Image (cartoon, rainbow, N blue to C red; front, top):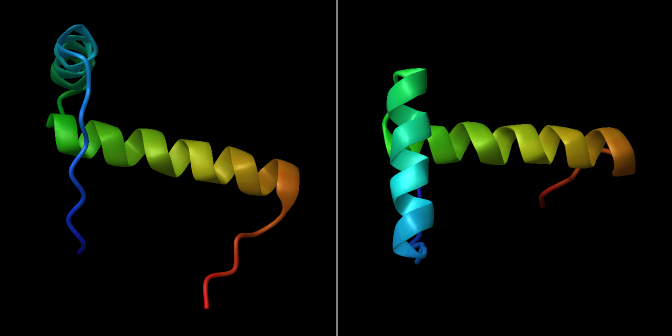
Length: 52
């Protein structure tokens, strides 16, 4: 697992926490789910991302 620092406006962070709590996840897991969904959508439109 890699570490990445993310800077967000406070109101966006508070909204993220609200959604994560609603979904029963931590903010970190909510971000991971959002990224996975976005990558899946990207790959559906543009093809599989191949990482060397």
